[in-house]
Length: 217
Image (cartoon, rainbow, N blue to C red; front, side):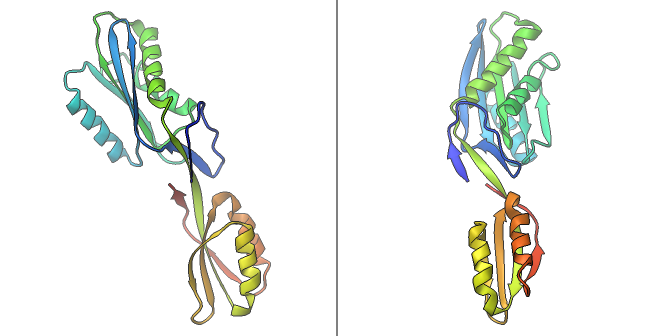
C-alpha cells in the first residue's frame, strides 16, 4: 500500500483503487452562502451514514447537509443525497467529483448555511462541486492493492524451485508448515495471481488451491 498527496486524480490499476488516507475538510463561499465540506474514508454504508448523522447533529442549524459516497474497489454501491436542495443539484455533483478524482470508499458531505441569495440550479451545482473539490484537494490518498490467496503443497525437495517463483512474483508468505509435506499459504497482488499459478503449476508435484480475494488496505 502506498500513500501520496496527488494534485490530480490518480488512475488505479485494474487490481488497485485509491481512497483517502485520513479525513479532510474545506470551506467554500458563494453569494453569502457558506459551504463546509468534509471528506472521510469509509468502508461500509453503516459507517458512511454514521458520518451523515454525526454532521447533522453537529450542524443542526444548517439549511442542508448534502452528501455522496462510493464504496468497494469499483465505486459500487454508491449513493447521493440532495437533502432538500433541488433534485440533482447537490449529491450528484459531489458524487461526480469523487468519480473524476478516481476515489472510492469515501464519503463527502457538504453543510450549507444559506446566505439569503438564491444561487439557481447551475449555481448550486457549481457550488457543491467546488466545495467537494476544496475538501479533497489537499487530502492525502492511498492506493489499496487487491490481493488473492493461494495455497501450495509439495514435497520438501521442491522447496527451492517453489520459493524461487514466490520471490520472483513478489508473493508474500503468510504461513508455512513443514510437518509432513510442505504447505505454503501465499498472498499476491491480484494482477499477478495467474502468473504465479502458471509458474507453480509447471513444477511437477505441486498442488495448488486458490482462495478468496482480499483488499489490501
